[in-house]
Image: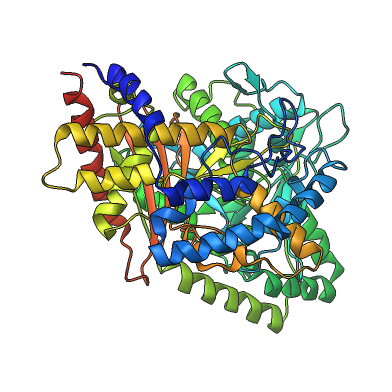
Length: 638
């Protein structure tokens, strides 16, 4: 019997599975947690919930509590949930509906504040994401002596992408026949986060041609110093030879000269401390404010880095580590896009996460990658360099206090970054083609392999977050999809049972696959529950109400609530572009992956100071899981 036929047979079995009484009880009580059903075109209204109606979808039970709860813990949580649903929860939901009537997207402002702008921890490592550029896999292998030449060409392609956005010629993205919201792409260029004492802000200077003038300058950072130049001359984007002239000038200015004051390191500081340091910096000289605004409004930042990661197509670890933990004096951590150019001719990116999701950067980088492939990484146009001003150095006025602030920022940054373990390897035994040949969804395949890898390493499941894209809605960003289901738990347990038959393992696998695919579809269509729960939490907070027991219940955080996911995961897509990010919690992992026809590239991060975690071991367990799963799927087709 083929695996597809097996799926169809088991699908009927899934419908017949009877929950334990406590499961069904949870289904009834957790009806309140139905995520907002936003409608066909807008992500604007929380779902109209019939409190007395029968819940027709599986919510909190399998995705949250049960995989982590003892029977005693479950009973406590069940009582809390019942009180919540019969009382304050309904009141909060009605208040949420009132909010939705006055906003096209009731979540947008809240999400930005709660997830990013109100956070006080250093954001450069805890919030930012990055990734290695894939150019080394084809026309640009690691090579010394070509840093500036390659940077000029990659910059030119990036500027072409900016021009596509500015002239509104970038085709809207689609999911099937559904057009996706493109608002986040406005934030890729000319965007910066500005620290505040209690809350940060995002400033976006980008405009399309039809909207008016837009900044067109670029900031280059080298050896702790800043330089700026206009990337447009007489209405035309600078060519690679012209960009190379500017980059060469910057490099020559910095060679043999003292290192700069490294003001950029302040962006890696704790947010309130950085806000106060910034206020002081502006106070000692108004010209410092002008420099800050020049950096903030720039198209993007180019970091000329002396590091030589020497990554390969099979091992991206060195460059992935550098983009996350490299020299803080040449990264403006609040900038929407830092393009990092290494001395060995390799590249990477580091971005503030607040303005947009990773797929915005992935789309841009894939565009550059495809353009480089098409031109073999060479410039084939005119070598003429037009007369134009050389880059201007931006020199801050500093004093002993500023130098002390910079020193403190660098110290805390290096202490933290030295604790981060990063591995990024290519699994080359098979990829998307082999998985799809067996009628399985590649993303679900990787997610379940990760669950099995974690289960094998830690003897239990870990609360897991997978990004679900909600761009089919107005200004939609993400919903949480929770891969840690009862079905996944049962499958992992079955896989490690010596006495379990292949048939039992296959059936458990198919049940886990079906559940995962169902939950992902729900989350992408506005039927998850995490963002709705956040709305209820924030309504209570805004109204000054006592925090409901639901949100202080230990099982709430144990199952991932409040940003406590042990596994923080994200699919970077099916292109050549990869990503990397730090774990969400100290005892957890950050896990990014991309899926190609012939390979799976995965980055895994963990904190060295955690006695529970080891990123290298998790990756090796992932490899074992991938092989076991493909073998299981293959034997099902025999």
